[in-house]
Length: 447
Image (spheres, helix red, strand yellow):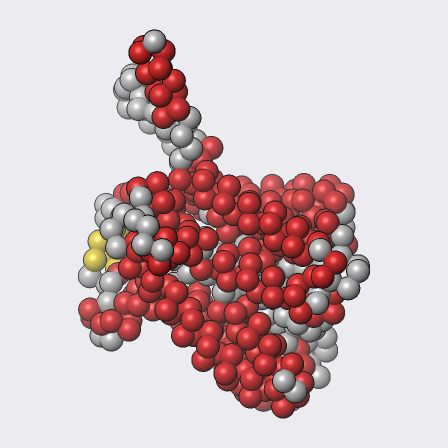
């Protein structure tokens, strides 16, 4: 009797799911729960089916922002509250709240929870995870409170006390890089409003930098003492924002469907806003569907890069792009190691970056290919939609509502993978094994 019992225990141990798989299941569970809540009659005005509720819940939990219906008109106050809660849970990380709740109840956080939290926060170490979770919550609450107070200066005078909820909702959506808005034209009504154009980008830039970077800057307040990750994130973010804003203005300055009808000041504000929003924020102050194809390609590139690790943003991440560029420079200089800001990077970082980029590109290209089968002649719109879904951005050229059932399923899948992480999904699908046989080295010719 003892031997069979031991076999059962061993079998249970081998069937134990890895942390990336558990993390994926947690997100799926909250997506289904959110869909059920949004499907209830109390959540909408009678025109939201189960399919639309599931799509909206997926978009909220993955902090994407792609929608099939006007959030402000289709959903009631209760439904909007559910969406805001799903955005907050998805943006800050489900396991972050779980660890904080266990700590508040005095329940020790075990190793399984720490492993899943490590995957959720994209960390390599198990140390200080509880501290990071508390820091994330403190930074989020502080930023969202200040943001809501400033946004209330715009919404309350215009909409009365109902504008207070709009300020809170848009502050949560902006900090978590969700892109959900309570107006059918997003924030286009305030294209020249300084408060909107400063507060909303400030929130999603802070959220997109990553909690580790924000905490590092607050703690050190000295550029030399910052970690290599923080330096790469700050420098890379500044370059991408500057590049995006300047290029958007140059490409769209005379476009009658975007910047053309605006005044010079409004053009500058809109260029700044649209240059920063592809960092997975998803808000827009101009007609995105009216952009030139060249501007759409620029926006797609920025959406693919996204924000930072341990942040509310999606994409392959700014540090990934930095490592790719550093590796390219090192190759042409015939260097065996990468150098940045007086620090070196090893081969492991390069291998992880290559794996992440390869999985991401394959996912995006596959999504575009499958969507193009049933939606021929709309390539740029489809490519824009898929890239936006993968980067959990939420910007759209008006294609979301025209997708069929298969198309919506593909977009939901890409949003989910884009949030949980292509590398985590790759680890989940891969078979980890130590090779028992070693083969002699071979040679291939590249280029």
